[in-house]
Amino acid sequence: MTTPHLTEHPAASQQAIVDAALLMLRQMGLSPDDLVTAPQDRPPVPTFAEYVPVVSAAVTAGTRRAYGSYWNRIIAHWGERRLDEIAPSEIRQLMSWVKTHVVARRNARGGRSATEHLVAALRCLYKHAEDDGYVTPGENPARKVDKPRRLPSTRRAVTDDRLAEICQAAADGGDDPELDTLILRLHTETACRRGGALALRPDDLDSGQCLIRLREKGETIRWQPVSPTLMARLTEHGQERHAPPGGQLLRYRDGRPITSRRYDGLWARIGRVLPWVRTQQISMHWIRHILLTWASSPVRLRGRPSLRRP
Image 1 (cartoon, rainbow, N blue to C red):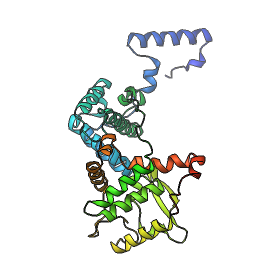
Image 2: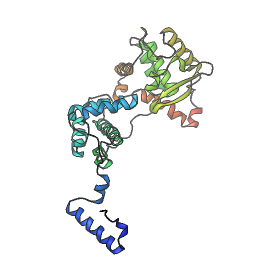
Image 3: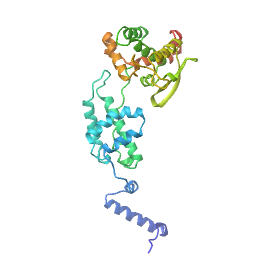
Image 4: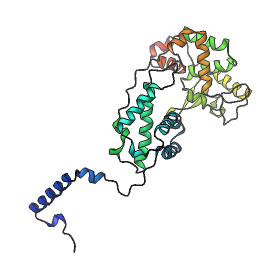
């Protein structure tokens, strides 16, 4: 025997059936939305220890670098728990723990950035879990936790005389002042990010047009004009330190590619010579702001010696 469809009943009977169904749902503690969002043949929900490596392998290298340490903390705290077992209050507890156990750095701001990145790392993880059908948007606890609002940046463009002091300090000491001054010149002329400088290759140098190709944040690629002297120095550096055409350009004297640790050591050394650098937490991002600030002010730019042509 087949059950008549709702539309086969008169309008009054249809309403009575709907009312009866709603009453039954209320008695069961459910709502119509619960029926819509109910899982249909959902796959077994993995633990954090099982799922983090899956997501880590699926994201870009930049995302992996940004969130990797936070995913490791999540595994350390919740490794054997399933993704659908975490409540928003537990995320807030982990945020508090991360804030109090953050590694103190020169530019630390009370752990606020660490909690922001933790929430972002969890949102990334759970977004993949939604796409894979392990949780629904309504069950995603990371959606229910507010990300701490980012504080205004303290970075600004340093003045010409201060920049000259920084360059002099870089040139006067260290185990490779030639490398350090080249790094500073590259960032001053191009306003590139640290990742863009580390990704620079000999193949990215167009000496004929004095252009270099920069690969930076968000997988963006741009061709940036540079001065003939900087182009010549970059070319010589690659030749002298035996950088392969498709390999990293910036290298130590023994031919090893530099890493971000070179930047950390450089600014720590400059800070010992120039206390105001350490006090104000100057970094390569501040050097970036020099060109960005002057480029946004054409009137001031006309009165400033060019950074591109000596």
